Length: 201
Image (cartoon, rainbow, N blue to C red; front, side, top):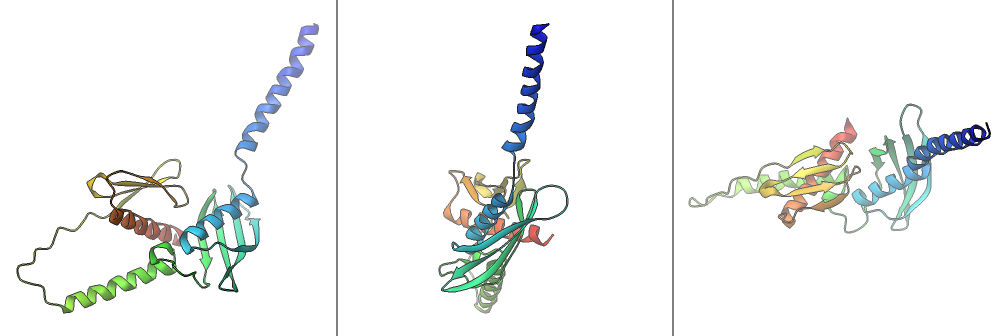
């Protein structure tokens, strides 16, 4: 009789502990949403000075948040915002000045458009020049292929066995030994274009 009285509280306590641990391990709140937004802004726009930030939970299922804040560039403040869905940044808005040294491939909205415009201009200029008769053009490299894993990570597969792995918010994690710097740059541009397309959907 006494042994049953001892076992029952132990079992109840163990169940309560088991129910509490998963929730704590997978908790996602306003601070996490702000951190993910900052990381994406830093990666895509080269921003580093974040101020007056706040996150608001959006009604609906899953982890959905709206993050707003300001960033300071060259002494002036600019607004920015992110939308988080299921712990991933699915939409960003930033129309402020970009810090010096920002490459076109690093900008999700402005840089991608600038790169496309620059490519079109170079292509138009090249057509005006006569090609030497003996020139042999190399075969074009295969287009990068993006594959999304079940855990949210994304692989960009290039030619010659080069594979570049990105995390679920588009930051590069690692790449194969066969990847050249040109292939890494191409993979980065492909990931930028893919994320831009996803944010529009």
